[in-house]
Image 1 (spheres, rainbow, N blue to C red):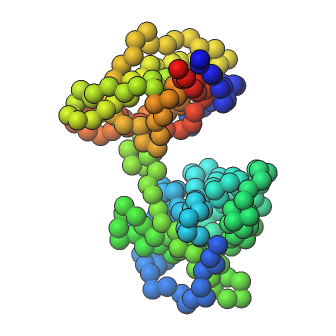
Image 2: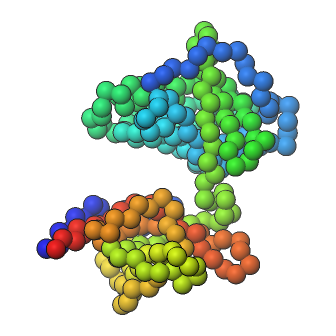
Image 3: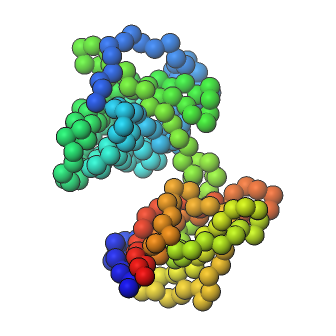
Length: 257
């Protein structure tokens, strides 16, 4: 028996592409962007997603700053959103809005820590960009004492591939097949789906095809057939290739005997 679960039914909204407190510390001896004009602090801030591991065994607090000055924060439960401005090394944030899901007490404490740091705050930023793969961003909260929060950066695919994502929808089959471009590996079987502006399905591949690339961030379950939204980037390889980034699950169908 097959059971379908429609996770997001309003397709038009899918289409657009785009606790341990830190210890009291002194000012870190890190690269000072005020005296290093080769580093564009705003560019680095928006090119990366920044994560702070406040408490072990809990999801990290993750902050994303976009070019439109929107701030999005994931705390492990609720999502917090606001706006931001950067003047020199001073980051100013607006009043945060938050979703209102109930969380575990540990996650609620972590959410309060995130709000205490980012809600209508002025933070001094310093960055260590010696390692471009994992830059370190320090946010210094001036509250009479200096508390330093160190965030680790993960480059966003838009910055990595220097392109805008194409949003596509894929049906993912429960079973995998041997990859055609490598040995001893399994690849997803997919069908591409297209929708019009009203969210009505206008096209679907007639046959399953083997997708040679992996879908970054996607967790496969052989008991579930899924329709997912994916960001597809064209890489700078000599032979045109694509990078696929999992965005969200639109629909899933549990396959039972």
